[in-house]
Length: 155
Image 1 (tube, rainbow, N blue to C red):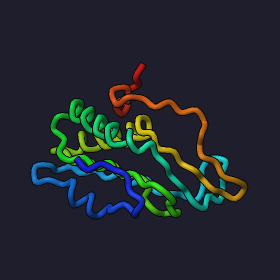
Image 2 (cartoon, rainbow, N blue to C red):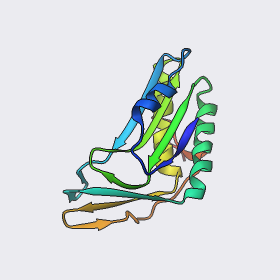
Image 3 (cartoon, rainbow, N blue to C red):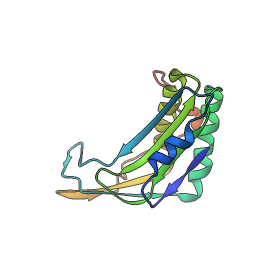
């Protein structure tokens, strides 16, 4: 597994090369890029990320372990997130998974990105035309086992 935080731009080409394996016919790479707007916030000019760094690696590892329990045949998994300022158009987060077939590659990659958002303590500040916010609205951090599979709800 390749997990971590980076203040440098995320190496999408290297991740894609690394995650592939000869026994895996399906490779999915999700890249979440900084966009110039969000709901009710036109003109977003920059994003900035902070993290509770001591908790990031253990939570990412738990997420990968849970993905391997749910999809035992998956190959490699990469989960990377930016820290600091991220310019519009740059990748802020990457989740990549390889698997023998596309169905489990897509499902596991979706689980990993959704799980990262739900279980890893990373906060985003947006700066837009009329203000800025650290997104401090209540957000509960979950454990990896509580993250729903795609199309499933966890009660």
